Length: 221
Image (cartoon, rainbow, N blue to C red; front, top):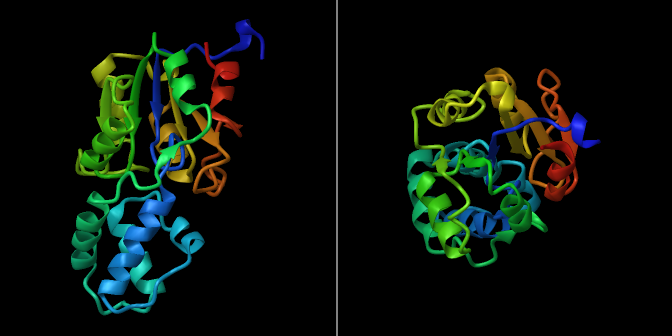
């Protein structure tokens, strides 16, 4: 894509898990530790991968069901997970290749995170990885009353930075990211290397899909 054909973007918004950082092993370990504590069978990492992306409550609800623990209250399991995961946020979590340098390359733009992960966990992981500074705002799954695919958090960010939707790009690995972006009228970029399939909702196809975050530099000016 030539410079003249690149998208004019003033605000870049990233999903977190599966887009910027690979958190899967720490999430899966924490889920399985909770299941063990509840005397349930543990789950393969790939099974847990399929439950990530919509927030902690769906994560634990699906994990309980898969482990045969439908009789266990999801609220209790969520509390146990948060407590456990809080102590293991950075055991194996790391950035995907080229994420740091790509975010830094767009340092002249507004940059933010929009995730269904609890906001405090995002803050702690970024601080622990020494990469909090590039992001002017973080919206987590508990920041507002709704989560993606509801576009509320995205619209709040657009309002905060006073940028027209056509000059905003949302980058994520899942269909919930793409749907939120489409409903808000912004450019949507799916990444193929994350936890989910950005094409999995046929009603909301991403505008672009990339296999490495560095490819954003070929799309965005």
